[in-house]
Length: 218
Image (cartoon, rainbow, N blue to C red; front, side, top):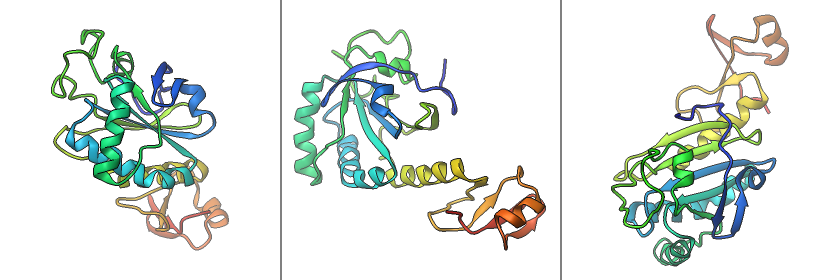
């Protein structure tokens, strides 16, 4: 069964580069970004892991934790991390899951159930669909899913932008318009009447009865 937004993120226990974790316990009361990779020592993913290492402090500011996944063993992850630091100029400090039995990849619908139960002999091509990003909230529910092809590096600045939007709209009855960035005007949701909007969002603008904008709250 495919995973959808607002589904509870499946829990699992797995080995990582920072020890064995229970995923839900590891998330705790924070946000989490789980991003997966088809195989260790692949060029595009090397650049991605390095960039995430560079911008991890931005996620920390937002009370969010990073965790990577590849179907290869943890021992390979540790060797790969040295290459990442050498070539990308940033040390990977977040944990990387070793999914050698493909259990997590299957649990998150990144590989079919009949994909086997070992990473041995598999290539990046056979793992091509293990290339997703999941934003998971403190309530352990999936807030975003995103899957890229192997040939296209992911835009992790976009993941930060979406996280800002999700966290803002979780606190206030607003939505964010196209290409919104932190600090820009937002949209008042239809659940707020004009009378209430006058109290909560004084000075809001009505462009159409269904399209009302206001300054970003908070």
